[in-house]
Structures are given as structure tokens and as C-alpha cells.
Image (cartoon, rainbow, N blue to C red; front, side, top):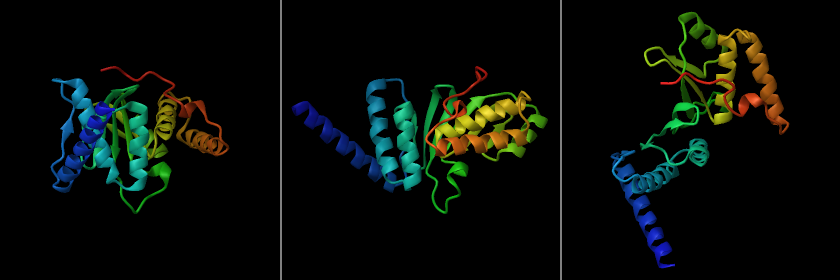
Length: 201
């Protein structure tokens, strides 16, 4: 019991300190190698304090991502970052404030993979979905929405377009069907994970 009480007090002090740092705009916690266990706990407390001050939709997305991927590698007042999680090079969750667009277009959760594209392919993806972004120099394809399932759907359909299994118009119709299926309580395999292997670093 004494150890549990001590940990609770330590957690409360860490959250209080994080809130003070947030108020003063000076919170920066990144992953360090010196003591991974203590560092992870500290970032966990800081992430909790940061998210507590976010808008509801963003806070929900952040908590969901923490449940999926664990403690973030970097904690900032306006965003959290995970690196090399699952198939993703990077996962970023941002505090997006009102006025909101629709959930599907809400760029709260950004997930990035390595994927080399040529200019005509980038143009085809832009025609399909504005929630996809491409950085040519780093060869990174990113999907942005309010949750991971929609990002899986976007990236899987992007791969189908690039490999000419679907046109942008066919991909849009497929996406509409997948979202309609989800509304019935079922889910498409396109929303459960990547259906291709991203390029490796």
C-alpha cells in the first residue's frame, strides 16, 4: 500500500508540474536513452497532463492512440509523437481546435509510411483524397483523419491506385461502401491494417 501511495503522489506531482510547464509554454519531453523506464513513465504523466488540456475530439484521439501504441516518444503542448510503431515511421496526434470539419477530414491523427512516388502518382492521389500528403525529399506518404482505421483505409486505397488496381473514382466508391459497412457495425479488411508492406528505411 505504501508503494502505491508513493507512486500516486509522484504521479500527481508530475501532472501538476506538467500543467505549470504547459501554462508557461515550456513543456518539451522527448525520448531519452539514459533510463528508459523512468523516462517512459515521465513522458506518460506529461502526455496525460497535456491531453487533459486539449479539445475533446483531439483528446479522445490521443487517448485512443496511447492505448494502441503506448507512451509517446515526444510530448509537446500541441502534439504527441510516436516513432516506428507498427507499420508506421511516425504517428502524430495534434490538438485540432474548432471549428471542426467532418470527422473523416479531421487531421488529428497523422500516420506516415515510407513510399516512393512519381509526380503523376502524387497527382492521382491528390485527386482521390486531400487527407493524403506526400513529402518527396523524405519519400513519406501520410494519411490524416480522426482515427487509425480511416488512415489504414486511405493508405490501402492509395496503394491500390498506385498499383493500378483501382482508379481514383473506383477508390472513392470503395471508400463510401467501407464507411457504410462500418455504420452497420461491421468492418472492411481495408480498415484493419495495411494490406501491403511499406518500404523500409
